[in-house]
View 1 (cartoon, rainbow, N blue to C red):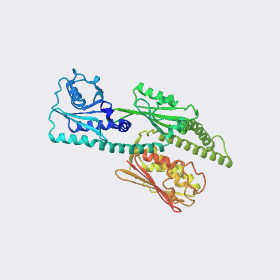
View 2 (view 1 turned 90 degrees about the horizontal axis):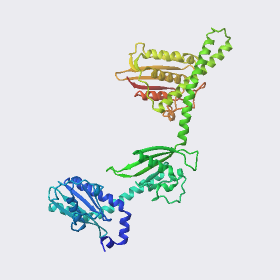
View 3 (view 1 turned 135 degrees about the horizontal axis):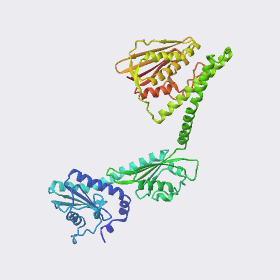
View 4 (view 1 turned 120 degrees about the horizontal axis):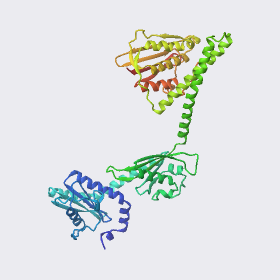
Length: 501
């Protein structure tokens, strides 16, 4: 009867259940001993009878035979090593021996026990220096303390595993973990639902191929075939043709670059896919609509110039309405195209040039002067005509100025005013648009820069689409600046932005 037969069945069962964990623990032990003393060779004899050797030094066949003799208690048999043996994770048959490697100066073997039963051996061999008495005592003491450390480490690992499973079970994404042999080690409820798997079906320990989701197997096989560590796919489950599921396949490795298994992350991407399709259609429609809108606007302007004949007052009013609506729609389409560029992460073309801020302000005021006069609102330009020039993105800066000026006029009551101010230092331009409008409640000042955000206290008229401030924020932040608002209800608002120059 050998040593394994002497182990109590109950103890052996527990050790077998914790076999993988114990293997990694002993592996960490060998790595630590070798890292601390580079001239050491460390080995452990596991419960399955295999010898695992860790070393930073090259080994000869004689070195391995020394380890085998000490670990197993058997004498050498014509240089043979009957036990399974691994060196730095490689089978002995693949290891390249160094015939010039010196023999060990000294070896030490200490028993590894669990619950008073011997479950293996720890071997330490020194190439360059004999093990003194103090080190021998420390190693034997370490071997005796290992069972308690192993139990405590196993307890901590169990707690971490429970925490991981609790977190993974609560996530809205489907998660499947497989070992390198593609047997399922974990699967959460979200994955069951996405794959339409019965809640009572046994999953853990089963091959991935038995889930009746062959496409997941195919994805992993494709990653293996192509030598990929990650792979992203989209598929339609057979049980629900209208559902689109995104799968992220990733090969997991530990800190030693050893394969741990495969992770499959599943996500319902139906809405995102539909939104992307809708966004693409909207962008395409915006491009197609701009040309006929510009033709309409040009035709109306031609009629208003009376070069094609005189118009009565009623006809002029109608044409002005058509022109205003064409301008508004054209601006909306430009905003939609800008937002699509922001979402796609397309950067601005770097068209930095010298900017004369007073000229940009004059153009913005000219564009909205008629709008301001229709509401009896005064535009006050406090920026000096001699304001210093600076370099920047002129077209984008003018777009922000126009958005802020238009916004100030919209939310100012008749008889009020909108004031433009600016200052320039060595590094930044600080610009302010101040109005005497209705103000912004404190609860809405953070969200005012969100897309399609509309205030409930709008004083009347055509409110717009709620895109101007959000686009201005995107532009300013893309320039490396920031934009913010100060406001008091019933008094007015001041919009400020600061950009580097």
